[in-house]
Image 1 (cartoon, helix red, strand yellow):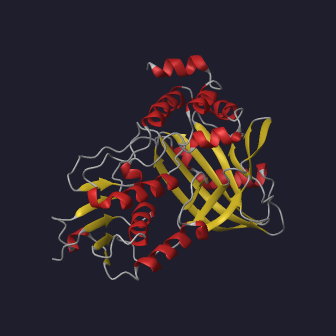
Image 2: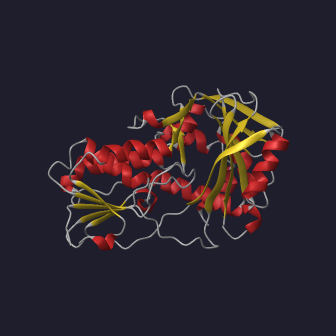
Image 3: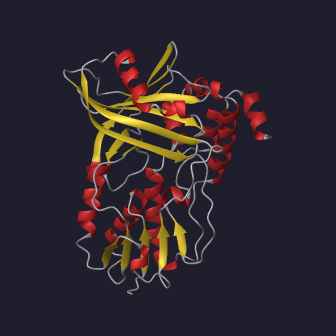
Length: 355
């Protein structure tokens, strides 16, 4: 069986982003790459949204950009600006199409359905496949979103709703998220931060129908797209292997307190591309220990006091939106971190620190 210099296992967001970065910077002109991906064809199956705190390669895949947003708890709403760091939403279908078309032009890149089709013994492997069971003891961010189309103009497409906590919590943390792509189309998502043992939280279709018709007060619409997902709010554990690096969520690129992953993947891909010739000799790329520490405390509070979380998220935005966005996107400095921390219920977080 044929051997390759590099192997990428899994051609989703992380695997394709890395392959694109390597190809873009001509790291594969004299090297071969095998991409292992079982799917027969690609179609839109995800929506990746984030604050644009860094430049990336996929502005042409952005479905919509917003410079205003809101956050809601019962009887209170904040309207905020994000002009410095606009919020972007990427259509995965456009992302897949752009990258696959580019990669197919390179004669040194090959696609396979299964790792057993090639000899991987002497290759350097980048793995993006997460092998975690959805146990009943760990916290997850699980969600379902539908893109809907109203019969008439209905949405204000200049502002998106980041979190609407004015909904049933069921002893967990639950909010709705609305991205208006136009005056007639929007992605509406129900999101839970919880363990995966409460099946009543997973009646996503009923939750969305009830929210759209009774809360948004939209009666006449059709569903044109649907997506579901579950993001682990913990870092997967893997055995360390000499010639293997995990990437994407498998490589710890998900920010545990937010679920944001896309831009972390882009930074990791760039880091690997820049250091590919000496990849075994350099320090591991990871989300800053500072954020790992703060996120672990945050998740302890979420686990012990879920009823407090809507108010905690709302109070966080008493800091300037720019500060909060930088904090949520791993770009804040010490004073900005302190500004966020001082908005939190101190005794609750101090107790969580020592749990």
